Amino acid sequence: QGQLLESGGGSVQTGGSLRLSCAVSGYFYASNYMGWFRQAPGKEREGVAATYIAGGRDTVYADSVKGRFTISKDGPKNTVYLQMTSLKPEDTAMYYCASTVKWPSTATMLTASEYDNWGQGTQVTVSS
Image 1 (cartoon, rainbow, N blue to C red):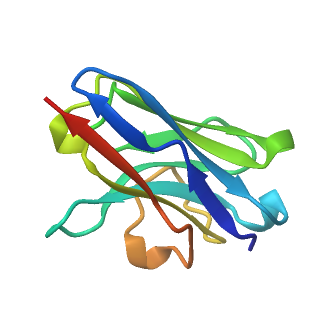
Image 2 (image 1 turned 120 degrees about the vertical axis):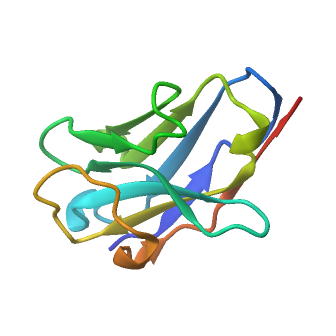
Image 3 (image 1 turned 180 degrees about the vertical axis):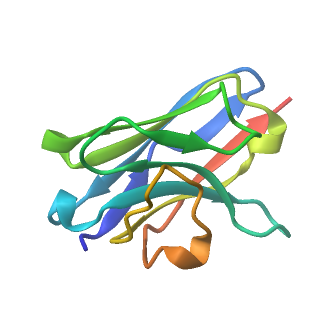
């Protein structure tokens, strides 16, 4: 699987927006499934969103971000995005993208242990 590189993090106020990018340096379709995770200090890593690399548009989101975050992909750019809107202080965390060759039968929130390829993370800070 290709190397993953996150970017787009930053510091915003409550209600602001950010778009995170996960660029794949290798063959984009070497992986089948891509997820975004976040981890705040003192908390376990939490799945945020996931989607299939190729094929349909099926996506899945954690309840905590549903309706506010959107995962998308651009095959020619070898990039997966996480558009975040209406940000809250509770969204503050280090955000990671991850990929796996696994192919869930339906779009589902895989656990962190089911991914074997991770980016280095990008920090998102939301202040009130």
